[in-house]
Amino acid sequence: MERTKSVFIAISSLFFSIGFLAIGYGMIMTFVGVFLKENGSSDMVIGLINAAFFLGAMASAIFSQKIISNIGHIRSFVTFASLMVITFLLHSLFLNEAFWAILRLISGFAYYGLLIILESWLNEKSSNEQRGQILAIYTAVFYLSTAVGQLLLNIEDDFKHMIFSIGAVLVLFSVIFIAMTKIKEPILQPFERYSFPKLYNVVPLAVTGSFISGFFIGGFFTMVPLYILKVFDSKEVLSLFMTFTLIGGLLSQWPIGKLSDIYGRRKLISFTGFFTAIISLMFILLPPSETMTYILGVLLGISIFCIYPLSLSRANDVIDENKDIVEISRALLFAYGMGSFFAPVIIGIGFNYLSHQILFIMFLILGVYLALYSLSRKRVEDDHMSVFVSVPVAAGAIVPEFDPRQDQEWVDEQQANN
Picture 1 (tube, rainbow, N blue to C red):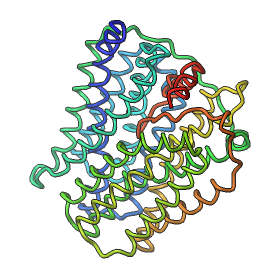
Picture 2 (cartoon, rainbow, N blue to C red; picture 1 turned 120 degrees about the vertical axis):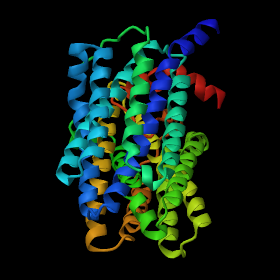
Picture 3 (cartoon, rainbow, N blue to C red; picture 1 turned 180 degrees about the vertical axis):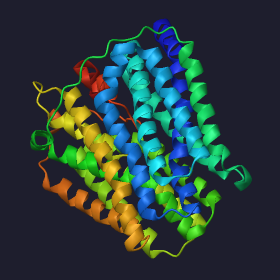
């Protein structure tokens, strides 16, 4: 007990750092599209600029590990954090769409590099028995901090340029906690590469669910704000809607996970797909109402934020013991990133040439497709099932390493307690 307590005290600085980063991440991710729209940018251009962030995130998953290995965790953290601060401040100095796309690319690379560093430290300090608790705290901190970031969108219009400065300050706060840490720097192992055709043959439902989940989440953070502004023309409504949706996502993790342990991932992925489709249809058909929009936001969060962890659990259920689940999980995370990248591009084009309703029409179509596709896949026998583990709404490439399901004893203990 004392040892566990000392470990959590030791890594508390990491959670504070994650919290400040997530507040800034959530605030800026939503605000960029809003700011560009107010300054006359087209929806398609806004989508492309937002997509650049996720392109940087995917590049970070491939290349940032080499930088961290060469210069160390603390210096890498300071480097990536400095890049984020610089890009945030340059956003407020120059409004040029091509330049902003480059800034979003760099900030996406830096942000996910920071997550890799923080996650590898968490992994270093986690024993097999503690990983489930640590990952749960990580997930809760991430959801709640990102939700807090949405509330900062209510800043007065006269001070809206300060949003980028506030984001920079939040990143600098995260540096303070890291600069003072005494945690030993772990050694990062090289990442293996899984080809997507090969991965799809092994875990087709997990790949499909991860990609569609990324599309939903990427669309939520980048293009849903434009939809809400189009309907209500109010940043207050927008910030509350985003906050309620994130809270819905956090609150749903435990019950959806428990239900999936009982009824299987296939059925729960299908349920979340149909549920997303129904909520999307309600957005399309119901007349605009602030109260109803907040309710629909909570329900949307319940569905879209569960699909990726359910997909990851499905992979854990069906993969043979002789396959490397860590590398497959990283590949699924990359598929999630690809979905996040394509969402603002495709939805932005749809906004530009069709209608803002195209967003929830696409959510509806993808939700129905995921639900039907999930039901078409083979059921996993009860004695082959692992257990559900929630993961953060945005995660770096190290999360699969401290997923507690890599320890079969932990899995057996959890199953015995259920």
